[in-house]
Length: 258
Image (tube, rainbow, N blue to C red; front, side, top):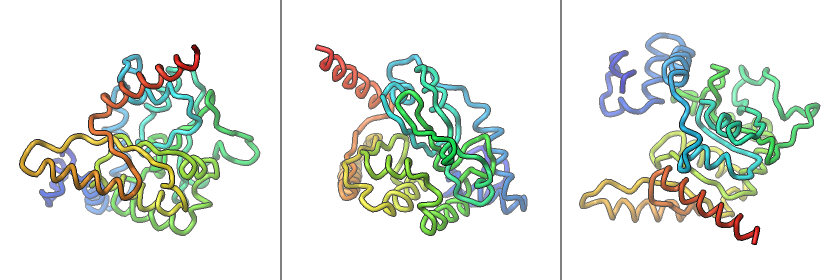
């Protein structure tokens, strides 16, 4: 990882773990905000938006669906832009998981009267977004603080409409690996903490394990793990899943039109 090389990160076995490397940078520079500002400047603002006109672009396919709530752990604007591409009027919101971000106005303030809809959905950034540095959950300490604060004040930190979306819907996990800290925090720290959140079967998109003598064993393990938490696996990449989802959705709508 580039950051590990730039800052002489001494633990080679975890040099691709962003949370650990970011934690090291924060301590090494004696500045908690430094890795967040660096991440926004170098990793987010330099990214090019995906081609929203492609039929297998995951964000664009999701944006075409008539959903009022989109929950993401990404920090960028691409989900928001995908919704705009499909002529919707999205609002961007974030989880107010620490004191620094609670002072910012929210679209869910009672006076606003905002209620997400299919034409005016909300993109809820669970781990913060690039417009507010302090909102980012990036370092290991951030993830721990996020978990602790969620366990203490879940009802205060998540708007009721977002809680309703999590507990009352099937969930779709795209772009996560089982070992990723953002998936583990998302699942154990949030979904399991909300009573009834996994009563509906959800879906996770997973790449096939690399070919080898242990590939089938790894696949059986992942099937069993996700089955235990009521999550069905789709074996393939995000583009394959998006293309198939779009075909099925359009076939379903076409059938309704007959």
